[in-house]
Image (cartoon, rainbow, N blue to C red):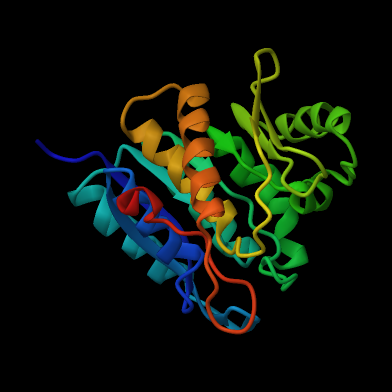
Length: 262
């Protein structure tokens, strides 16, 4: 039996907590074959991002075609795409691939380091989001993309409607930065799915966004519906956050292998 294949198009995190490294660990934990297109190399640890180097569009396109044309994919997940040029190239690639695409519109790191040029925002809105099966912005990214500041659960609906205007089929607004339970809203503009989980008092949450998007892509690759893939992804991420561990002097990662140690 061949495993479902999932491709991540994202930046490398040298500390192993987020980016392509988090994506591949998530895919392994969820029983799919993970493959990668590296879009940028970062020097990164528990304290922040010390440097980032974008790969040429030609290198990104060649990696993508190499994997998709030979091995094939059942789902694609995008993460850090630093420039407008990269955003547009990746949007074109995923639009031409017959597989669901989960777009995590990464704007800033967990430590507040910018990972997307301001000039690329318009390309995310007009090129990348329309190619998405599911977009998974956090509240900072919602503010970047739509200028809507989410301060309560009621604002999540307004934020979702604003992101859907750009064309993704579904949007998952991650409300993790609100107080109270960790609540996310998944909607396609008609159906609404509220995903709730208890908030864990654990500061070691590096990589949550990458992990959630990769978990959704893994579910879609297995043939799950978007709501079911999102529900299972939320369960997986909640467990990974609860088991997040200290690493270095700053914010440690979520534990991608938590189920393996149960």
